[in-house]
Length: 263
Ligand SMILES: C[S@@+](CC[C@H](N)C(=O)[O-])C[C@H]1O[C@@H](n2cnc3c(N)ncnc32)[C@H](O)[C@@H]1O
Image (cartoon, rainbow, N blue to C red; front, side, top):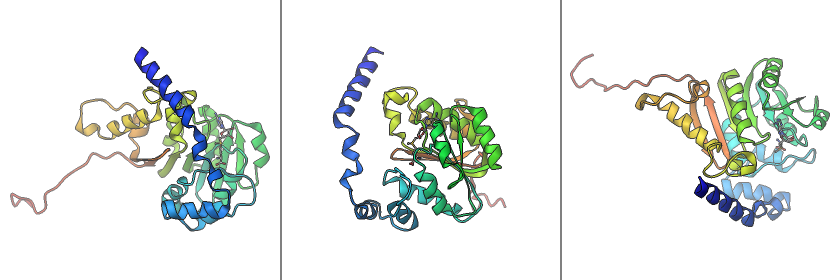
């Protein structure tokens, strides 16, 4: 225990020494450089890159490497009457980006704990004020949306909130829905309830979901069936976790043609 805490304190100290500053977008002061970085680092271009790079309206703040991940998982939902919820509205720019990306038919909602975000209500989507850690509030928002196809959790980034929000919203998601959590580097930071060795680190939870998903092959009871029983894939990227909803079905296997001639 003492060794763990000391190790964690050392991790935090080393992290503070290196700092978030080395990632800052000041390396790319010109918009052209953002576009160039998307292209050279990720081979990414197209509508979403243009919407992000050409934004002249409300501020939207995204890590560059998130854009191709959004595209990969969200593209099938474009120009359809899908129901999209972003947790974390901040300065309103991301809702504007999603409106341009998903098109006029999409039902777009944002929630935020900050009452000032109510100023963005009715512009690019609906904004509701409340905490993602409040399951009753989340359920009321989903009821108002008439269901939900995509969740993007860019809210508090607090480990306990991420988990509670997931366990509330994932069962409410459309049977073929997508749930994305971003900025999960916070899983390594103590002020978000994370830490390299700490139990609260969300990646420990995802590891347990992976174990649950493979419950056919071991003897331990599923730990988070409220999510894992209805999850068909878990994808981890740098700081992003994507869960695709789908029924858990016991796998079958076959040899064809049958080796004993049994047809
Ligand atoms: C990282 S910002 C969102 C940025 C925005 N999505 C963008 O891409 O520009 C995080 C937001 O989450 C909000 N937030 C913090 N704690 C929250 C909570 N418990 N429930 C809902 N929103 C919360 C903050 O007020 C802040 O506006």
